[in-house]
Length: 173
Image 1 (cartoon, rainbow, N blue to C red):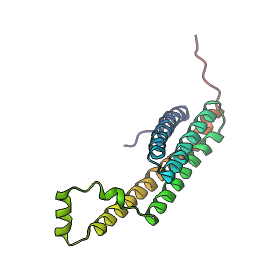
Image 2 (cartoon, rainbow, N blue to C red; image 1 turned 90 degrees about the vertical axis):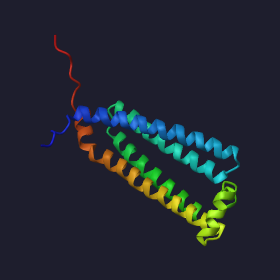
Image 3 (cartoon, rainbow, N blue to C red; image 1 turned 60 degrees about the vertical axis):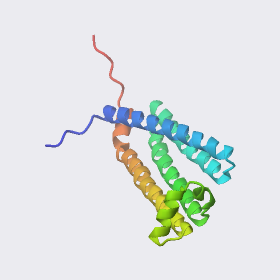
């Protein structure tokens, strides 16, 4: 038996809680990795980190609007997820067209080199397979996660609007 749907106020509360946590997480993690990229002179990585942090700021802006009773906040929540999706997929595409194996070569141990040579692949071929596979997986996970979050926020748009339209309940004596 299915549980009844949540009340609009409960839906609003859950969306606000999730969006605040998600926005803060994206902002903090992307900001941290942007600083690391900048420190490592990885200009594309630093730029993408700042752009991703912007998605977290967009989401937090949406939370602020909803807390003020403005239904446009839901649009900001959905848009932040779609924006983040586009930025990450563009970055994955950039990285796939600008493969740099030098940093990866430094991570391979002698034991791994022996295993790679026994597999019949050259070291560069092996690194390309690992690089493209991990980039593709990252892109696919992002597509499902950010797409799912955008869909989650969008599906709750009507309940959020209803919760914001209703006057808050006052306690009775």
